[in-house]
Amino acid sequence: MLKALLNKKITRWKGNNYIIDEKIPSSYLLLLSIDRSLMLLRGKLSGISNKGKLFLSSHASIKWRRNLRLGNTVTISRGCFIDALSYNGIELGDNVSLGMNTRIEGTGNLRFLGKGMKIGNNVGLGSDSFYGCAGGIEIGDDTIIGNFVSFHSENHVFDDLDIPIRLQGVRHAGINVGRNCWIGAKATVLDGANIGDGCIIAAGALVTAGNYSTNCIYGGVPARLIKKRNDRNETQVKNIC
Image (cartoon, rainbow, N blue to C red):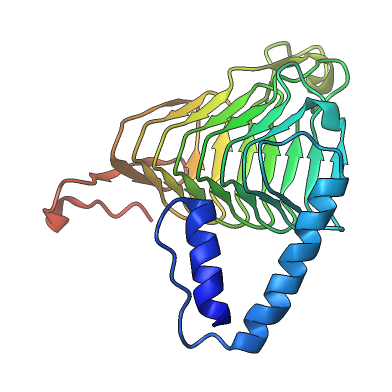
């Protein structure tokens, strides 16, 4: 009975058919339901503007919440930290979930107000990840991002040999990730990266500044093309290790 009820509710919230594995004990689901209900209550009492349901952990920290804009059915998990101070603020679309210990910083340095971050609908950010939004970060709909991933939309200037690098300022080109992408665990994405729709970034890859074509798989340090997703000739896959 409980599983049927949860399947119905989650399907309605997510907008697609959702079926819980029959092997998951009802006692586990009951505890999870209680925890989610408390998170929903905290979301309602938080005063944070949103378009529907906000599931907010009591162990999440949010600064400058006036710049935080949320869609419907957003989850901010335990240990998350969001500093929304930035020109454009932090915007999370419908059905967005932030995994445990996700850290989002709208501004990295008080000498330069950051641009902020915009996340589309149906996006999942894995646990223990970092998003530095000084140069701006945009992530398209239906993208999933693994654990221990980091985004750095800021780059230090180092042209002058006579001035310490820390005093030469920074550049901001921004990071763009398209729709329906998968960023693997422990990947690092640097300022100036433009990742096309349908891309897969392999675990541990270093994505540097540049354009990454749609529907391609990239991996390595630095990341380079492994194959196109519609290329079924496995002999063309390059060993990049």
